Length: 176
Image (cartoon, rainbow, N blue to C red; front, side, top):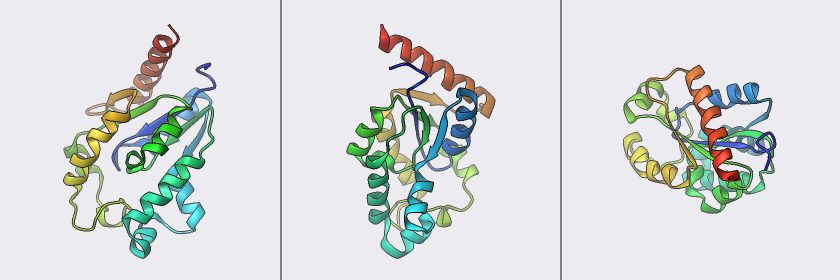
């Protein structure tokens, strides 16, 4: 696959910067951008938090899996929801479009970034803390990642450059 036609799929915790970095990557790489959380909200005409309140976290994860499985996005930057990694079939489907990039951010940094934990639409049981969500999901992010980007202590410009470099390097190795 030509690197200009492949997509980059961003995974990581809520607050990791998938949507923000995704938009910057799309601009830098001349690719379209899609945010699967927005696709869920458009489909349901509700916020993620409203879906959680009305139907529960498992229904939100099911909605996310449907969006992932219906995704047909070559040459895109795809920002996934934080719980995308609970769907093995969804992740395998996305992988056909390009490498999966885990934006790895420390729990301490994430806790500083997220001030609206209870209104953020995080697909988790009501009694599960953010630290418990992190501990549960991080191994899944690492399992599915083709590329891991350590985001700690780096600004957005540095992260864009690192993702572009790592993605190009991975493509070269894949082709070899």
